[in-house]
Length: 339
Length: 160
Ligand SMILES: Cc1cc2nc3c(=O)[nH]c(=O)nc-3n(C[C@H](O)[C@H](O)[C@H](O)COP(=O)(O)OP(=O)(O)OC[C@H]3O[C@@H](n4cnc5c(N)ncnc54)[C@H](O)[C@@H]3O)c2cc1C
Ligand code: SF4
Ligand code: FES
Ligand code: FES
Image 1 (tube, chains in turn purple, green):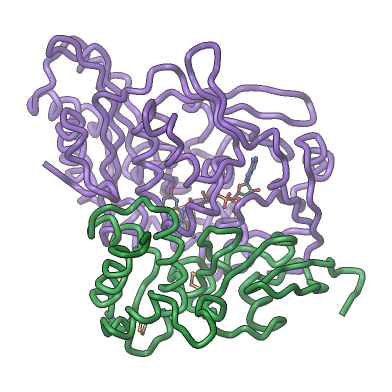
Image 2 (tube, protein in one colour):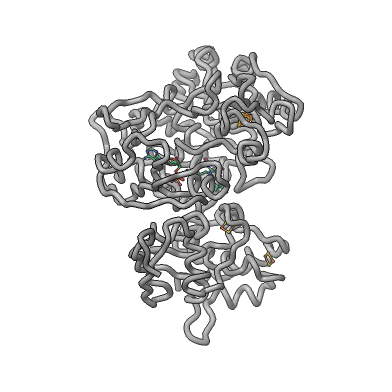
């Protein structure tokens, strides 16, 4: 790590003024991603602003809309095991518990989870070119070992994936991100929060430097009857997803009223397809219909030397997970395949 | 040594109070090992990937390599050195011996602290749950089966 100064703040406004729009001043919450990146000299800081004491951003409240607001500073573990979340948003709970390890979930915060950076090996290796770490230097992954990389929505500038599990569920649930910055407060729909790599792979998301995530809103609809999270990876726990799927189904009289399918591990942001979700509307929840939806989601997928297998894997994972959603009790710890 | 860059930080470690002058960029793991000289907590990877540095802070198991000493000012910490009752081993220490739950022993302090945290969390019902909730602690020697056996035994009578 480079040498930096350190300060603790107890309100969001203090955090904003301590950061002061300066890119070398960094917020630290759980520290599980930032401290790691600092140790590798991928991130450098002049000052760390510790936001953990901000009590106003560490609560869970029921909203008048019927939804729930979860504080940015709540830990991932406290979220996953909160009785309101377990009962109303079990999809979110399962997705969180499929990520990282128990120790890391005890430290990691909700805000930090949204802001975590890619696990592309070349991004972590400062001796190699990487447009995300060093804009304009090239992308070592495109012609390199790209087993964990993107198959949807990538650009030739960067084929990294966003590694979060929790955010895949938040995308499926149509969450919203509440933000406060020097210019006041604003709200970003979850789909608008993370970005595709495009021509600006160094920018992961639409939070401006100096802005703070204060909380995340979950809409009333939680898909608590028919939901499932499936995570496929090289080892069965404590590992990032090759492909993950969050499914929420609203089924009435044997017919799908609404379907949500979000993918993780395949793109620079959690991936959804309106076309596939519309296709499932008013259809029966059958393997054939889920296969059709999977084909629609993956129709523009493009693989590279080492990750083409992900295209077929993702299709099968979608079908499998939609079937698991019909019988949520079948789910195993760690979002392993069941049924 | 107090300098312009240091922060006065008090930690309670295994019931003893320490008032330290810490540089902000020093991990809690390095504070424990190098400042307080409690070397039971191990550094495996220093990047959150192995669990060897697991300790209990304010009742929760966390990775000491991914947090900073200054961030834990005022916290109560338990490390492997603090879990036995005098000469009487903690039930998990005893069970690790009986179930052959280690070879080199390097992962063991982290495994035991993590298992204490897991049992306090009380979320694991089945053996599969225990395996999943202990997956943040790797064992290079492959003693994992003995480790899970030891924890299962203690879990059985843990809340007596
Ligand atoms: C070994 C390992 C395995 C992991 N496996 C998984 C996995 O399988 N699935 C998964 O989803 N995650 C995984 N993670 C990642 C983990 O979930 C993230 O590191 C964690 O969520 C980050 O949260 P934090 O509070 O620790 O963030 P920090 O490290 O404190 O911060 C991360 C970034 O977020 C910014 N930030 C934090 N809070 C705010 C805020 N309120 N407003 C604005 N900016 C903010 C910081 O400035 C920093 O840039 C893993 C991590 C490790 C180390
Ligand atoms: S995929 Fe993105 S993060 Fe990885 S090397 Fe290429 S530019 Fe860097
Ligand atoms: S040393 Fe902390 S997890 Fe490996
Ligand atoms: S006993 Fe050697 S690493 Fe676990």
